[in-house]
Image (cartoon, rainbow, N blue to C red; front, top):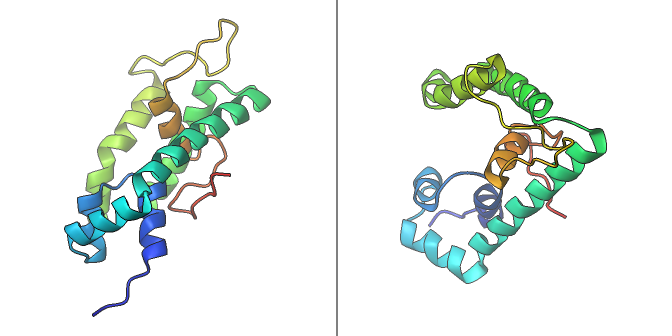
Length: 151
């Protein structure tokens, strides 16, 4: 029986975007085994807390540095292009739609939401902030670079 690094598997789930079935396939664990461990150790609750904390840190960072959503998206797009260049060819095909979406937002081909911090107090949704933060737009290390601690 193979020894599993359950801490690494848990960290990938909690800090990543992968779903449980895909993670089970990727690490070579039966889905019911992974699901039972996730339930028993409360991984989903930790994942939700991690994401809420990531959004809060992103907002705090943006407010402290008076960053607009556009500036954060520009950083995320730049990092996405750098990351994309390092991917294996088959992974590039899967990630290309996301890269195209970021590029479209930066070139004005799709409508941009208001600034994270603006005179009217307009804010992006949590999902949008999380997406920007994961793209390193808030200066937070992405899970691919090493998972940040959510404390």
